[in-house]
Image (cartoon, rainbow, N blue to C red):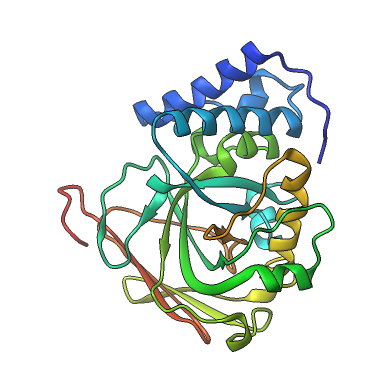
Length: 272
């Protein structure tokens, strides 16, 4: 990660405010990199943290983190060459099978394994063994990614500043211990309203979703951020991301974990 940041605090606050206004007005903005070509990844994480501070002041609670762009398919789809991370707050979680009425700008869906931690995990120096000890159980999950950047024209700094393009999370309700699943070999099938969208495996996520958890802990540790007991960690998608629309139902099946279903409400707020 580029650790050099040259932006002053006022500029960081202004760029964070522009992203927040995109949430509030449901109007995407032009890529930040178009206006400020000097933006670094370190700058982008400062902008992300400024947004998180605002959400916390408004009553949100950090409930976990996500790793984005952790598969070659997603890096190719988004035109970037490295993973990133974002924060998951309490307002981002939606119940399985219940109509999701939250306002999104240009949502897409991704199937992921969710790690739920039973103990703190703090880098640097975290190993796979440390990560295994920290995981209490895993769940099937669907992540709703969204972008406040117009037409998803994101660079790595745009998506980092935009909280790694976070939108929402639907967790399944069938927890399993790590010992019960083979994360690397786990197969996944993704359906939209009963029609097959894609297939994938856990190996698509940095070789194994556990590697993404290790990367996350070691990346955020030097920033003074720890993964806490009870936190949910989304390690990245097993397929490409697919657009979703009001009225659609998305189901992911993961071998050894079962199904998770997200129901997107119609425009009138009823189930699809």
